Image (cartoon, rainbow, N blue to C red; front, side, top):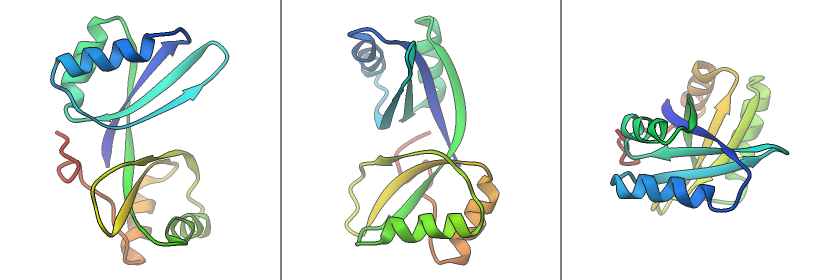
Length: 142
């Protein structure tokens, strides 16, 4: 499991740019990013190269932050690769709270970030079916 940083944002122009600039200036690399929008605020979900430093820096910027565990799953980069994993999750009754893709340089796999109802069960299901999750180290994260 990897740690994901969620930042709650006001819906106003320039806010995401401000956060990404702040992280950039601190030498923190973005590995994945997703935005969910609601009427009053947005949620910026990120996998970053150094979550502790990012959390500390953004807290000083008065950002509201939470840290969650997510799984990054290696998906066979072929037609039906994701469909197979989603079907296996459905068979095991693993609910997906949200998911988003992660761009990484791999010739044979794509990566998807999952927040699920039962992380240990997900990891067991992956192993049982010859699939695997991806480590923080593989993604260049601390």
